[in-house]
Image (cartoon, rainbow, N blue to C red):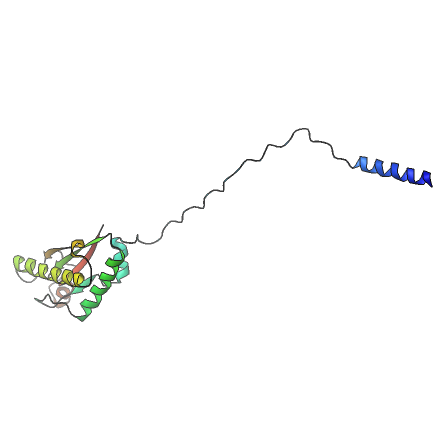
Length: 169
């Protein structure tokens, strides 16, 4: 029995010796610390917030208010548009705006420049009454010099009697 145990031990030792691993001829290089590459910054799509394009898009056409012939008073529809403009301007306190006054082609150049100035000032004053600092707003009158609609008809005249708010950085 002692012989059997000895044979078993020798056989086990031989079997284990056959399974032993050999040391590699050369060791692999030591691991290096790698920092993961930063994820690419997504390219912004759409206009830059605070830009004129962003303002125009956010206003959805309410960056322009319209006036009746020889008038510069702010009506209910204009008030709604100017409230929306004021909210935008308050959201972006680092930007300023210029309110442009425009007229249709009728009337003298001097008359239209003065009327355009009154229209621009009426819009500016309403924005100031809504909390926009006057220091961030300026006005300019173009009179009849920059029409958006060409033609000598009531439709063109109505489109040209306007005040336009332009964002400046």
